[in-house]
Image (cartoon, rainbow, N blue to C red; front, side):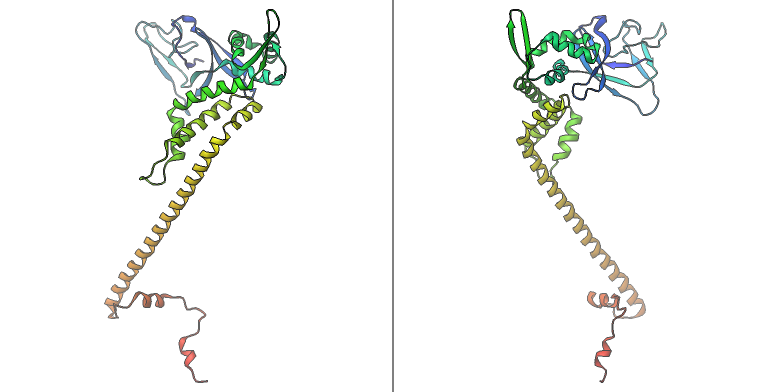
Length: 323
C-alpha cells in the first residue's frame, strides 16, 4: 500500500529518504516507528493524520517530475499508481505521515540514566542500545557526537574517553530549547492550551502578557518532558515549579471570577424572567377583570394573595367567632 510522507527538504539528492526504523520511545520504551534520512542524516518522529472515512489522495507533480523518478518532499516514499502520461499520482489511502525532526540525544538518556553514577565508553553504551534493538545501527553516527552535549567526560588513558550523564548539561540544553519553543509554539497549541485558558472574564479586561508567556512555556516544558525517562522528567519539571505555581494561581483566580460572573448573569436572567412573568400575569388579570367588570386596578400584592395556596389553613373568620 502506498503512503504519503511529508518530510523536511534535503539537499535534493534522490537518496534523501532512507528508511523507516522501529526504536524504543525515549520516554516510554514503547516500540515506535521513525524515519531516518541520509541527506542530511537525521531521525524524524512520525505523526499519522488519517481520515475517518475511506478516501484517496491525489499528488500533483510538475511537468519535469515523474511518479517513478524518486521521492520528493511531497511525494510518496513507496510505490504509486500512475500511467505513462500522468503528471501526478493517486494514493488509495488519505493517510498522511508527518515527519518531525527529533534530537538524537533523547535516545541515549534511558541507557545513561541506568548507569548514571558510572563513566562508560561509547562502545559500552552502544552495546546496551543494541541489546534493545539492532536498529540503533541506523543512527549510530548521530548518537556518539550527542554525548558531548549531555555528559561529563574523562580520559582514563590516552585515546580512551568515557562518559557519564550530566543533569546540569542536559537541563541547560533542554531549557534553551524551551525558550525557542515558547517563541515558536504552533498556533493550534497556543489556541487550545493558552488563549482559551487565559481568556479574560469581560471584554473590557485584558490578560497580562507575562501570563501568556508563562502559559506558552508550560506547554513547551510539558512537550519536552514527554521525551524524557520518568525519573529525569520529574526532576526537570520540578525546576519550573515556582513559575508554574504563579500561573496556576492566576488561572485559579480567573476561573473563580468566571464562575462568579456566570452566577451573576444567571441571577439577572432569572430576575428578569420573574419580572416578565408577573407583568404577563398582570396583563392577563387586567384583561379578565375588564371582561367580567371586576376592579382592574387591584394591587400586585392583592392579586398574589388571591393566588396563594391556602390548603390546610384556617379561615380568617374563625378567629372572630363567639366563644
